[in-house]
Length: 142
Image (cartoon, rainbow, N blue to C red; front, top):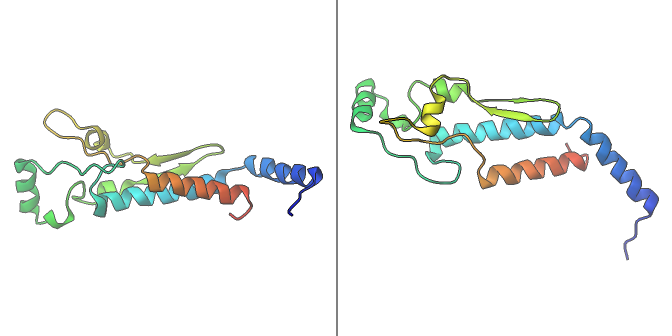
């Protein structure tokens, strides 16, 4: 039989509460992992966070990329500016993950004449990783 005393349970809960006073280490780890997920999505996955394949290039875009000689990189990876701009910033109680390039919203949401190719957002693996990271943090393993 496994038992725990109320004294031990209260002590364990107090440790969790103390860790929650500064969750930044967990948020930083979550942000770094999700930023990497976005970079992999751009480099290899070519799918939205919910798994939908991105729309193919328009004939104009394909011709432009062929002229540059970089079609092997695929969708959303032309000069590398977007890829290199993916960052995270953790605060005392939150984490922000994304990019500050001026055209990112057009890629994410689309515009007239350009189909959306969502690249920022949580996929199921990212959510599971965030949950496990926070659990490890609360258990004192991070």
